[in-house]
Image (cartoon, rainbow, N blue to C red; front, side, top):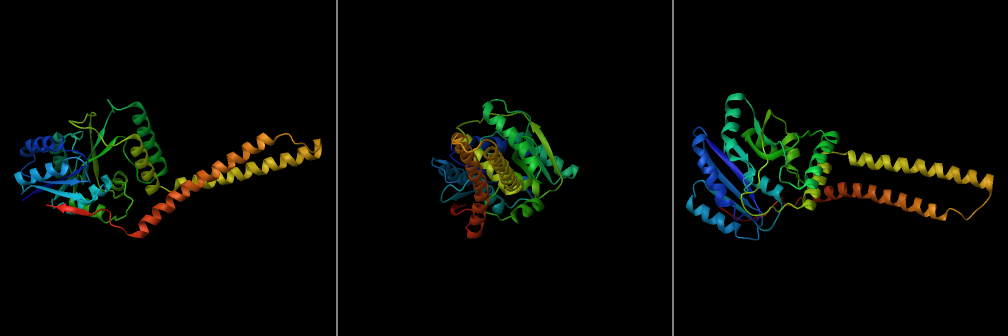
Length: 309
């Protein structure tokens, strides 16, 4: 039997899960005889998400499976767990809020079966309805990421994609604790096609992604797939050193020509604070990399399962 596994990370999605299941089930007849295996991953939700998944499993135990974490480990851990438990020949990743259009699944399947693609992903062509600040920084992140990293990402790319088993097996070989799936999906390569769609609002509930969480996620992406921040820290250090030499020469020249003076203490304090701030900034960059190394060396599990059916 041909099987498509759909991985759905869930965090406080009790309102969206029934709608998601009903919507995707209506599309199954268009999937050219493929059966759907649903793998919901409850990422330590605080609402009744797990209860909804348990009820859905009782209604359709053959096709609906769920994994419940012992606590919130993050979306990256949920995606990894779903990929590990997927049994399908093809594997899809989708969000439960239906901002990923399920009606594109048949076209994605056709592109893989008939056009020779290994991966068919999706990208939003606009961000209508999103706050301006979030959209601005998102666009800035993609531009920066593509300049400093070998993992080139398409502007507006989403996690929503359909992949062959070979692609998923390659992703699972990357077992790092600090994960950034958008970069991993790109880094493994394979022949990829992107389908475009207009931005959509959630069907229910509210997003758990605050601006601060997205900012931290973007920093993880930069650190995990680029060493350019370390080079920037080095250049800042070299630049500060040469500026200090210039100021030293200026002070010596002023002493020889004009004699001693107590004037200029304010500028001296400003320089000290400025250089100290640059040093702390560079230490912060280095510290982030060292922190990631520290977490990797601990060899902690990426997630802990509390319940699985």
